[in-house]
Structure formats: C-alpha cells, structure tokens
Image (cartoon, rainbow, N blue to C red; front, side, top):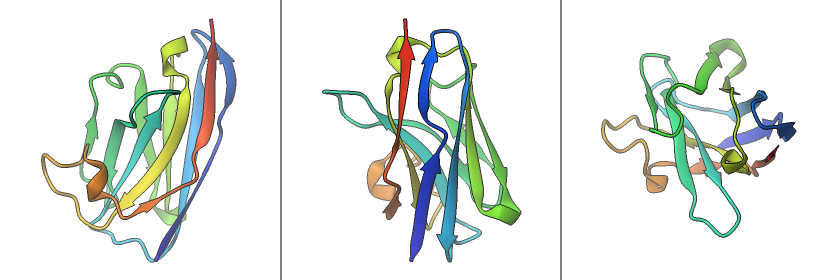
Length: 126
C-alpha cells in the first residue's frame, strides 16, 4: 500500500510560480514511477510529467516542457512539481500518482498508476 499526499496548491497571478509537493508513504518501490496529472473543469485528466522513483529518468508532456520541472527528495519519498510562468490554462486540480513499474512509453497512461492522491487545486488568475 502507498499513500500519497499533495500540498502547495493555491491561487497565483499569470506569470507567477508555484511548487507542489507529493509525499509517498507506505512502501513505494525504488523501481516505480511517480507522476503528476491535472484535470481542468470539464476536461479529461491530463498527464503532466513523471519520474522514476530511483531518479534515473523523467518524462515531460509537451505542455510541461520549458515551464515545469520535477525534483525529488528520495530520503523523504517526496516529489516536487515546480511550475513557472503559469498561465490561466494551467488552472486545474493537480494529482500525484504512483505506479510500481516504470514502463517506457507508458508513463502518460493513467492505468499505469495504482495509487492516487486527493489532488490540490491550482488557480491561475489572468
């Protein structure tokens, strides 16, 4: 069992920055994957980025490249999503997810993740 807890959401002006945190408790595998997804009102959930729990690789969606970065604190089982140059279209509920395997080419698929956090709201005002 793995439990995920996100924090760091809030409201920010366009062009601003936010850092989200996701703490994994329980028994996350060192060969697994942790990711961020987001869901805007009325939209499907969208993959943002993912990182292997051993830190060896990361994978970014096109929407995240250049503005978002992922960092991890392995000792704390925590990943961070640093979001810069935020836009109103980044407004969404951001959720952390954990999967027990890193499978090349499949990191953006929701079904690869067994555990999900409750999500944290990010609102970007124009």
